[in-house]
Length: 213
Image (tube, rainbow, N blue to C red):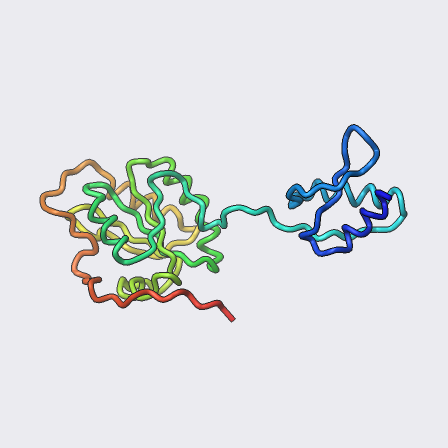
């Protein structure tokens, strides 16, 4: 009976319950627990092959979890969702160095660089790292002259924007050098400048990103 249920389960859509082998018995019991790991599917496949002689090709679903761009290195790494939030965050940063990364979820270079950026954020808790999704903030990004991804802006207090450049994983040293240059001890005189002489007050309302065809 267990073998019959196992064959039926492997043929049904992947969302159906999967049979899990129990360590205390040779019998298989029906389970509704999540079955996204390769270990469970492999064990069920091996049992089926031993008992029937057939080869099973199982499809493994990816584990549910945050996408690479949704991960954060800590409290000093913030996702920006609008122009208003961007300006407010810069204003509230005070004399902290602010590193802004403009990225695309579809951008391979952004994905390759991101783990190293997270590590850098962990190493510099005194620096604020902002993440801006280009597709969800296109009007603002275009106003800020972001034309290639990944792209970085460096801001600090009354000095406003200090530097901006594109960067890849192979050239990550550029980011380290910019941090070393701009993260020295200093006190700004006057209110934070934010984006400098660029006026974002007239940026049109952002529209949702369209799916790539």
